[in-house]
Length: 110
Image (cartoon, rainbow, N blue to C red; front, side):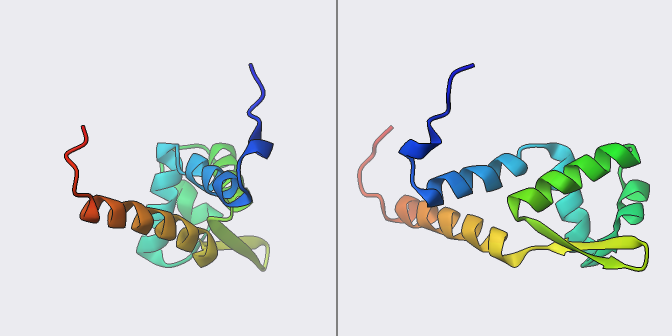
């Protein structure tokens, strides 16, 4: 496998790539949708909601947290997870930029 050469891209491009890559799995999308639905939860609730094992869900939660899309706090012996607004604001900004382009394009390209 070749090198990704991430140093050739801006910090913002690299960060957005990490955020969107974390969204690239249906289980992670399901976790985010569940967090939106209940506003916050503990890991055990997610295990009861999705057809995945606890270790698998824990790995997906770790990926989402490392990317900056969720955050978690210890409450007793459990971790309470919720969405991280900062990560989603960055994604939102990128897609608003794309939407502005699409709304304003005048040429019939492609």
